[in-house]
Length: 243
Image 1 (cartoon, rainbow, N blue to C red):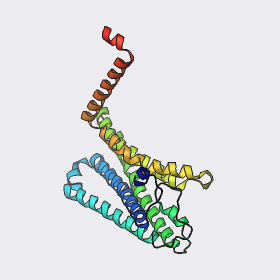
Image 2: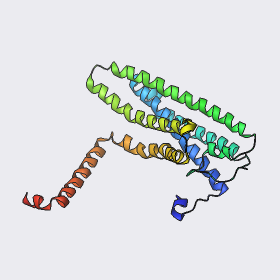
Image 3: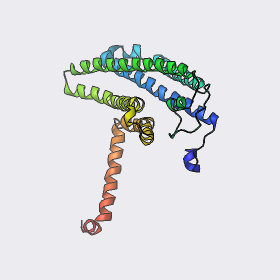
Image 4: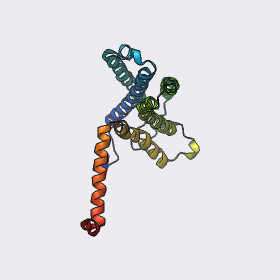
């Protein structure tokens, strides 16, 4: 934001390290919290009678603290290891923020193998969360389809679908950003895809989750109705005066 406002493309080394740390911290924290929210949906639908026992306020606080602490350690490990490498291939990236794969391309040290090892561990951890999410939703949908009333099924699906939409958008965009074939890779595509997975899912989170709120939907409908009424008056003033 600072670079955009001041028309510059420069960033200090310490600011670069801080940017990488906070990016990894919030990105991993969001993924861990989405996994916890999936467990919340699973318990509320598949083990509804035990919800208060399994997900009391203390359990929720512990899981949230574990998610933030894990994200902090994850980001700290990657940042410390990445910025311990000497950068001898220049100091410019064709990207709007500093990503670890792009930083590793600037390193000429064999120590980058440590970072590759950390990335491999990270992939295993993220894949484990993904398997947990898929397994949970399989159990959830099996339980929902056994609900006899259509209204009950609709209520259960309305609880799960916003979360599933956010998870799908988050995972699909980030997976494509890091696993796209080199044959279609280009600087402009890399920037576009990075915006897609780092900006779009967080921006859509409030919208997707809030639209489940009836009061918000009513307020949005009222605003849109008023907007279209003003457009009609502007475009067809004589017809509106005739009414």
